[in-house]
Length: 108
Image (cartoon, one colour):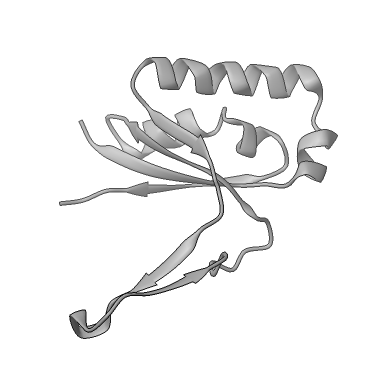
C-alpha cells in the first residue's frame, strides 16, 4: 500500500476559533488513524543538519521552513491513493481548525 507523509500547519488562534465538538471529532479521527497504524505526532523544535562533502556535521537549531502558519505536526499514513490520503487528512485537527495539511506521496 502506498505511504504518504502529512505535514500539518496551524496555530493556537485558529484552533481556538474552531468549535470544541469539531476539534474533538478531529482528535478522535487522528486517534483512529493511529490505532490503525499511522505514525503521527506534534512537531517539536527542529534542527537543520548539513554534512557537505562528508567533511563535518553542522547543526543549526530552529525552523527554516517558511510558511504563513507554523508547522504543527507530522504523520505517516498508508492509503490506496492520493485521493484517499487527502480524504483521511481532511478530517485531522489542522485541516478542520483553520490550518492546512500537505500530503506528500513517498516514492522509492
